[in-house]
Image (cartoon, rainbow, N blue to C red; front, top):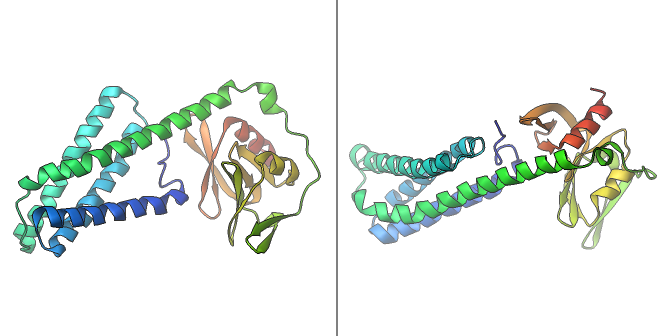
Length: 267
């Protein structure tokens, strides 16, 4: 089973929470304007129904990420919306019948909910499919790369023991041993340390050839990790792996990176 693209990548959690909060605000305001209900029931409706929506979206990955059948994806799309509507009805019914909050009938809000929910649900499923396609492409790249290119390490240059990062008028000096890992980010790289993250305009190849080889290994085309920070290596998917660092971050490992990592760790 593929790891979830949100929970296994901590840097995505804050944007997802921000999107969920935005959806809650949008639904609360629009429901208030659409139904003329008070702010309190509109807000309760928004929080609970969007929470239920996000829970369904989270669970949908375990179907989309493992089953690529076209019919199954259609079933997931329809079932997801139906389950969301059913949960929304239960929420509204509880507010009216059990809590005793005055609220309009559920049926007139269905068109609005569909207009609001269907685009959001489709966007989530499309993003999931993009993650699957990206993962498949990365696996294909590892399988088709020439074996000689994978096996032959780059010539090692003189090792560096510190890295300087200019941040406006300040210059940060980072000791190499303080590095947890390096992540590629377009034309830049992100240096991750216990004290924070620093962005530097530099290539991954430079650090691959200048960092001490006994402590650093390039496990993926977008990641270089400090092996002293690895707590475990675990299966990520079919014939793919990921490393879990001591701070809880998980990084994907390519097939060629896994071979280098095994050599470096002596496993």
